Image 1 (cartoon, rainbow, N blue to C red):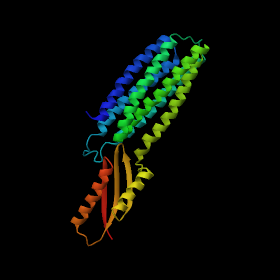
Image 2: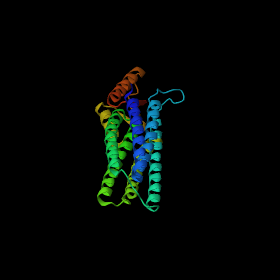
Image 3: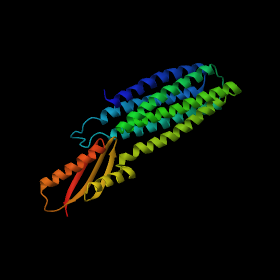
Length: 282
């Protein structure tokens, strides 16, 4: 099975189980911070489903309607996931404020709630690490976004667990909605970071400066005379085009062989790269 699809499926299963567990304990204990975590995990589940579908689509071969492939589907997925994270944070803050300024806060089964948060943190840490590993290996924006969701959930779950522990020690129940608000603010910060990373390639952003410099060094090492080098990204796909200069008395066959040599060198370094070379006489 495709590694990207397999790990995306694992994320769906783990999020589903955690939602059920958090929601049940949240309703039993009356803790808005635990319920906020259930909402957070619900958004994580939606994001995991989107990531699963996007990696399936992004890896389909180019077709007549999409001759450059479907890589940007992953960027669109990342944008949607970032928006979902933001919406989850707003819902959490709204519920927390209602709880903070509403009726007297009563909490039960706090120890159980803390245990559930610790279990959630451990599970999400494990799944997040596996997602990051596959995301880096395949340059998958969608999986990286999903991993960021779960990484955020690790921190927020630990924060809620510590907060519930403080409530047990101090007996101050209003700490619960305050913790939920702090969790939501952290989530908002993460959502803007993800939105920036996922949205930027949708407007054909170039590779990083280090990567472009690396390509230039490689071409110079090969003795290629060129100008007008351009790069862009689309999900886990890379595109590069250059204008290569060759002596005007070179044959078409020689030019073609030289272009193949350059392309083979670059494809040995970068996965999922498409190289376009325009030959010009000098």
